[in-house]
Length: 104
Image 1 (cartoon, rainbow, N blue to C red):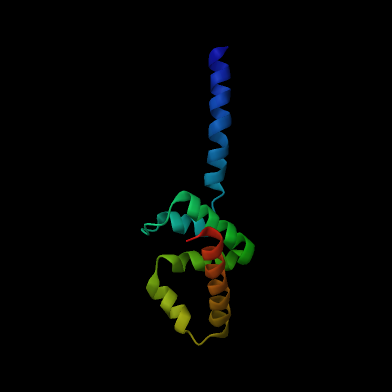
Image 2 (image 1 turned 60 degrees about the horizontal axis):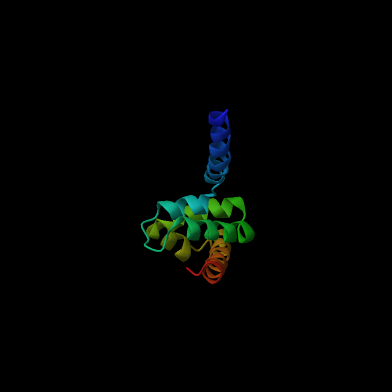
């Protein structure tokens, strides 16, 4: 009986963590993979929360690709395409909000 109770308690502790890890969004995943010294699980989760509030799914995926690829970010920034300009404005707003909200 003790083993069953311990197994249940262990499962109750581990299952939410596994669910949270599986629910990580594209920004959080990219942040956690980055080599930036300020990137940690708490900051990355906070940045994802801001992304959820400010960016749609497609923008989140695009932003995640830019986070660790400065060349791609530069290409979008200098692009003459209206869609890239509009995305860049949303991306900048997201970055400013994340910095203010997450302290990063």
